[in-house]
Amino acid sequence: MITLKEALKLPKEEIAALREDLKRRIGERGELNAYVALDESGEGVPLLIKDNIQVKGWNVTAASNILQGYVAPYDATVIEKIRGAGLAPFGRANMDEFAMGSSTETSFYGKTLNPHDPERVPGGSSGGSAAAVGGGVAIAALGSDTGGSIRQPAAFCGIVGMKPTYGRVSRWGLGAYSSSLDQIGPMTQNVEDAAILYDIISGHDRRDSTSADIDYTPVTPNLDPGRKLTIAVVDNYIADASPEVQKAYAAATEALEEAGHTIVHKEMMGAKYDIAAYYIVATAEASANLSRYDGIRYGNRAEGVDSLSELYLKTRSEGFGEEVKRRILLGSFVLSSGYYDAYYLKAQRVRHLIKEEFETIFEEADLILSPVAPTPAFRFGEMADPLQMYLSDAYTIGVNLAGLPAISLPILKTAEGLPVGLQLIGRHFDEQTLFDGALGLEKAVAYEH
Image (cartoon, rainbow, N blue to C red):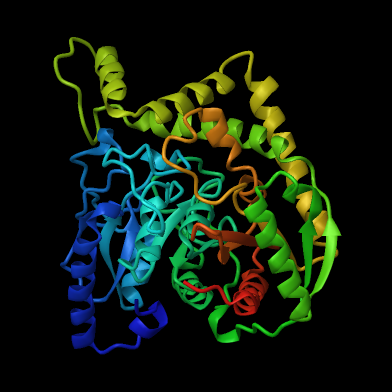
C-alpha cells in the first residue's frame, strides 16, 4: 500500500486511479468489516474516518442504532483541515458503539476482524480504522482515543497509532464520550505518516473550549530519528504482561540502548488506580453526554408511546447497546446524590496524583516506554466478562487521565504471526520529542509488516 507521504505527492489523475484501486481492495477484503460506508464524491487523497467524527452530508452514527438516520450538518474541524491539505474523507470506519469498548464487538454494524487472524479482535474502539490500515484497505485513518482507543487497536493490527496531548487537536465535531479525555489522532502505516497527519489536524480552534490556545510548530520538518534521549522503562508494569509483550519490551529496550539512548528504570503506582479512576470519570461524563440522545432532536425515535417519559425510555432502551447502557448506568450512579463525593470527586483526586507521578518521571526522562496492552490481540468472546475487558486497558488509560501524548508502534510478531506493539509517552505538548523517539525506535527494531 502506498504511504500517505507518497500519496500526497501524486498528481490529480493518479489520485483518481488510487481511489479506484482502493475501492477494489476494500471489496476483496470485505470480510474485515472495517468500513461501514464508502463515499466516492471527494477528489483528494482518500482518508478513512472513524464513525464518530462529523462529515457534512454523511450518516454519522458512532456505530449505534440510536443515530441511524442522522445526517451530519457540518464538517468537524479536523475534516476541514484535511480537506485543506489535499485529503478527502473516503469512508466511515467501524467502531465500538459510542467508542465504548476495546474490541469493536459492540458495533451496530457487527464486529470487525483482525487482518492478521480473523478469529481475533482488531482492538477498539477504533478497530475499523486499525484493521483497514493494517489490512491494506486504507492509506491512513483518523481515530479517537479516550482510554487507549487509538493505541490499543494499532498495537493489535500492527500499525502506528498516535494520541495527541489533550487540547492539541480540536474536538469540535467529535461525538463526545468523555469530554475531558477524548482526543482525535492519526492511524497510519508508519511513524512519519503519523507525524504528517498529526501536523495537518493540529492547532487551536476557537470553536472548541478545550482547545489549547498556544503556538503550534509543525513536527514533520524537524523530525530527527538520530536524536539521543533519556527513556524511562517502568519495571513493575511489565510484570503483569504476557510473555510475548515482555519479550517485545526487552527487545525495544535493548534496541534503544544500542541506538545510544539512555535508559532509566522507574516504578509507578499499580494500574488498578488508573482503572478505578478512569471508569468513574469516563462513565460519569458519558452519562451526561449521552443524555442528548432522547428521540426528539435527531436519530431514531421509538414508536407506539403515550407520553414523553415513555418516549425517552423506549428510545434509549431500543437505541443503545448493552455496553453503552452499562456505562451510562455506572456514570449516573457515581454522579447521584450521596455518591458524588465518595466516587467522582475521589476519582478526580486520584487523577491528579497520576498526573503528578508522570511529571515526576519526566523530571529525569524525555519519554516513557510502556506496554500498550497486557497481551497481543485476544480471540473473539475471550473477554466476555466486562470487568476483564476493562482491565485490558491498564496500560493506556493513565495517559488520558494525565492528558499526555503517546504513540503506539509495532515492535515484533509472535510465533502465531500476531503483532505486538509498545507505546512511547511524552510530556505535555512535546510531540516533537515523541515523534523523534518513535521514529528512532521504528528504525531500531525494523519491524517487518
